[in-house]
Amino acid sequence: MQTEPQTILGRHGYLVLALPGFLVLSVAIVLFESSANMDVYEFKQSLASLMQPDQSRSSEPVQLSDSNTTRKIFPSRLVLTEIKARYIWLATVLLNIVIPLYVGLTCGLIIYRAHPRRRLLIVCGIGAMLCLAGLTFLATQNEHHVLYRAVYGFAYLMLTQSGIIDGHLLQFARGIVSLINILAVVVPVFAVLAVCSILAPPPKSQQVDPNFLAKQMRQLNEVLYGGSAILVSGILHMGAWLRWPASLVPDKGSQEALLGAALSITTFWGTTFTMMLIVTYLPAAIHLARRAYDLLTSEPYTKTIPDPDAWLKEHGLRLSLEEHFLQFGVLLAPLLAGPLGSFLLAPLNPVD
Image (cartoon, rainbow, N blue to C red; front, side, top):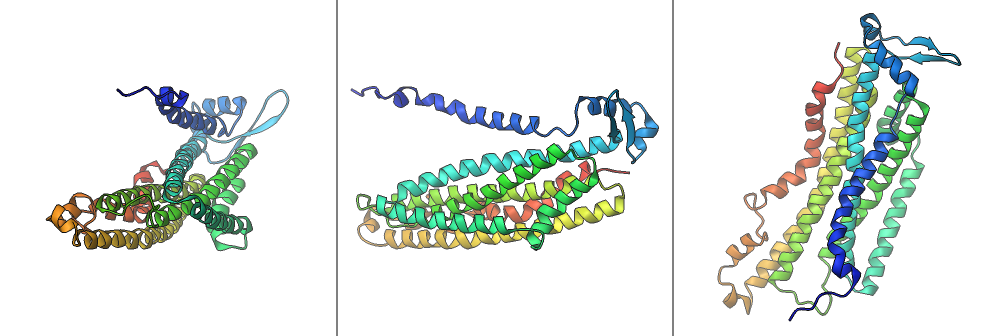
């Protein structure tokens, strides 16, 4: 007769499933509430300007005074265009916070379960050094580096110079982008070490059999999907971040040139991320497939599994385009994210 688990977690652990959804909602609310670009007075005046056609067509701000101060109110058309671009960017921010945290936790569990204690300490030490190197590189980036100017400074300076973005919102955006950059440095280290851990020798208590190799391939695919999701969301964020200041450029020709530059930057990094996935995933997958084939064609498995090809196909260990169509698509996803994101967001660009 099966006994009921006696621990609190064992009796009520199912309730933990309610937490992730509430955490996502909480992060979204905090981001949304922190993204204001005007106070109540400016908000009401901008809404009022919608009823004034001449002013709404203008690209020049007007001075409006209350009892205490004189404030600069921008035309409603420009305000609404900026709001549109800002919340598209904020949607990608939510993706770039939630997805890396989830993937980092998943990869951390894979690493923890793959190693005995002594080897786990070595892997954690290597991970700490890689994270430290990445964070050091991130901290040293400034206006003298092309990466800084082309992605972060390119958008941030334009938002600053536009005059329409509130100082508090600029600081909020700067903090959010810094957080995303930190996650972009740390979480991929977890993903790479998870792939390495999947291929590590198993603990002495675990036998290397076909089922063990099939489990390794499933874990490898999980890391691939998670890693690709991080990189795709990163490309979408980069595109949305560069599109935000583009929405404030009044000249149509200049705006199109700016959007073209943003697309070229995201395409470059999408290509880079796709190559990173390929050179990490394919060698590991080929290694597992060959190892599984060699195992199945040796004693005693030739008797228990008479058709190795069918078994390999069933368990995802036969590498071909037919069986791994989904995985090949996932490998190419970062490369396609930039052009696809630009195409989907094209109708959201300001128009004359």
